Image (cartoon, rainbow, N blue to C red; front, top):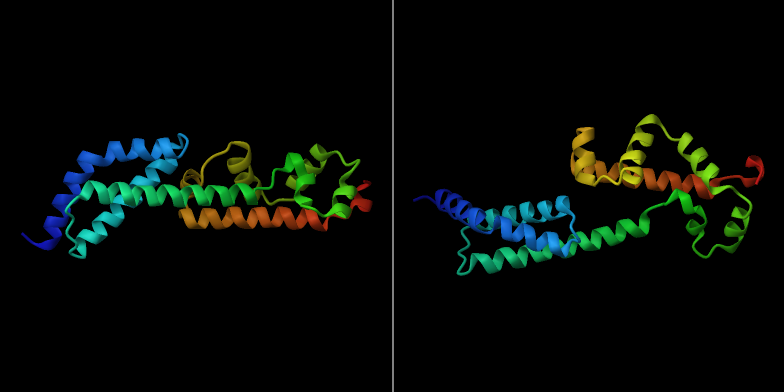
Length: 180
C-alpha cells in the first residue's frame, strides 16, 4: 500500500472515530462557539494528514489529535482576546481615549449615540455591511467570509481595516465643528 493510501486510510479511520469527540472537546473549551470549534477540529485533521503524508508514524494518534486540537483552541482564545481588545464599541466611544484625559474631556457633553450614528454614516456601503455583520449581528469571521465570497484572512483584514478607520475617524474628529 502506498504512503498516500495509508495516510488516507488512517485519516479516515481517525476522523470517523474522533471527530465528534474532538468537536465536543473544542466546543467546551471555546465557550460554545460552534464555528470556532469546527475550525479547530478541521485544522487539527489538516495537520494530522500533512504529518501522515510526510511519513510520520503515530503510536497514539488520539493523543496527537487532542494535543493538536488543544493548541488550536489556545490559539483561538488568544486571537479572540486580541480581537476583544481591538474592538471599537461605538456605543462607548469614551473608552477609546485609553488614558488620554484631554480627549476624554472633549467627549463630555457629546451624545455618543448620535456620534456613533454619524461615524457609521461616513462609512462606505461595503464598510457599513461589514460593520453590521460583525458588530450588530455578531457574526463570526468565517461566516462573514462566506457571505462576502472572500477567504477568511481577507475578511479578517477587512475587519482590521474597518476598526482602524473608525479609530482614526474618532481620534481626528473636530469636536468644535460638530458642535460638541
